[in-house]
Structure formats: C-alpha cells, structure tokens
Image 1: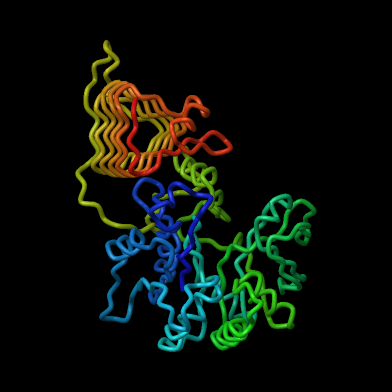
Image 2: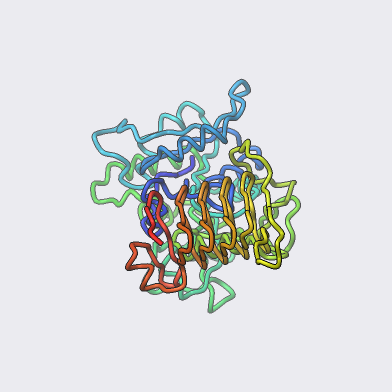
Length: 406
C-alpha cells in the first residue's frame, strides 16, 4: 500500500497542478518511481497506490509507466479516494488504509507494507521483511539517524538494545538522542510493515476514535508502542541493494521542500554521485519516452555560439542549440537557444530558453517559454516582483503556465 495522496504544500508552486509524488525528478522520473522501483526490484508485485490530491498527473504517469503483468497476478493499481466508509475523503494516512481495507481482505497477505510515495532512496524491502519476521514483530518501522536538532521534523523512535520500540513521538519539541549518540536521533522514514491481523485491528480501533488524528505516527504506532505490542525499529543503514557502493548506503531524502528537492537533484550531478542512477542491478523504472537522442549543435567559438553542456543530465529530445548548460538537469524536449546560459538549474519537460536568456539556480516548470534576453535567478527581489516563487535559500521557481515578459 503506497500512500500517494499528499498535497505537498512546501513544494508549491510545483504542486499547484499535481500531487507531491508526481513531481518530476532527475530529468525523466517522478518521485513515486523510487518507491515503486524499490518494491518491484524487491520482487513485490502487488501494489496499490492510494491517491487523492490532484491525482490526474499521477494517474496518467502510473498508467503509462507501471503496467505489470496482470496475467500472473502482478499489478500497480491506482486507487482513488472513493468515500467507501462515509461521506469524507481521507482524513489521514491511517484513514486512507481504513477506507481501503477491502483491498487487503481480497489479497489475504501475511504482511502488509505501508510505504510513503514521496521520498528518494534505494531499499531492498525483502531484507526488512526478513528482519520483521525474525523479530516476530506486530509492526516494524524503517528508521534513519538524523541530527538531533532536526528531530522536530520527524517521527522519533526510542528503542532498547534489541531495537524494540519503547516510545514514539511525532515531531517532538524536545528530541531524545538515539542509543550510542548524543547528537543524532532515530527518525521514522514513513515506511512500515505490519502483520495483517495487527494492522486491521489497529486501523479499525483508530477509526472508532472520533478524537484521533488518524495518522500512522500519531495514532497507530504511538498506541501500539504504548499498549506493549511488538513494534521494532529497522535500521535502514544495514540495507544493501545489489550493485550499491558503500558511499550510497543509508541515502534517503525527504524531498518535501523546494530546497530539499533542488539539493537532491543536484546530488545526481557529481562526477561520482552519492546516489547512483546508473546501477543496472537496481534500476529506477519510469515511463519510456519515444524521444530522439539529445542533440548539441553549433560550434562557433569566435562568436561564442557553442552548443554544450557540462556536469549535467540531458534527457532525450533536448536540443542545446548554440547555448551553454552547466550543472543543470534538462527534462525531455527542452530547447536551449543560441547564446543562452543555464547554470545550476532544473528545467522540466518542454521548456524553451530563448536566445541570450540567462538562468541561475532556477526551477522552471513544464512547458514554460523563457523569452529572449530574459534573466532569472540573479535578483531575488526582482524575481518575486515578477510573480516567481523564491525559496529561503534563493532558488527561484517559475510556475507552469506562466507568461513571462523579458
């Protein structure tokens, strides 16, 4: 069960027209591709994606990219909010499962994985399942160490020497350190395994509680730990996927803000990136574009009309026509015209950068036309005055459908 109904307010305006898991990433992927690739690479082939907020873009992507073989019982099913249990939409992550308990009843599994659809990482989920079964756990939470000062942004797990949960606090004001460290805390990744009977029992109990937040962290896990059930914390740092290098172990990013999304994209551009998209033993699957190869044209150094890209990811269908691209990510069918400069930027599908235009630390949403001679990303106040969103660290976001004047 993949929870993919999040609104992603901190990612606005990129989430103005799409759900957070549908936000493009790394040139040719969507954020949800990472959890789905982890499941499929782990040989878990029966997957329900629970959608709600502005799901049209996400639904189209799932239909285009994630058609498994139904003839042998494999599927990735998009499940919209249906008001099956009343007249309300999903009231929280736990309520999303409650309103779709019929899906679990139909499959009759021994273990249910409830994973979020909006993080970037690689994980062999079978290793977590084996650990869960060996512990005889009612529930297992995937965890990762975070700096203690960031503890108020996560669900924090306190554990004993056997990794059994002793308490769970959702975004606490005061964060307790993890065992063996005074500077780090053990944070939930939002990925859970449940024994089926335990999950159904807790979800139904929570649904009867009118005062509940109907949230897995605040409502389900806190109650399970408090009532003495067998809840364990799985150490994500022990998880190793085939072909992974040591530097990649434990890489997990919550791309919930403009800054984190930008930084995670930029991680891909290093000569020896800490997160490797090129591991053929653990591929990240996505939609297959029928785009032609990327093309770079013009080599007139005298007039500085040279089509080139350095330290960048350039997707199929792109044409860099006498322009300069540095440390940037170009999604399919982007055009960079002559004498244009694109630096430290992310351009989504179909963006056109006009002649002599200059972009620096800019995210440009799908289909936007950057006029000739336009400069964006060099003056935060000027960018805000023109209607662009500028993050706290100075990343300018140009929203989809915006008409820009030079």
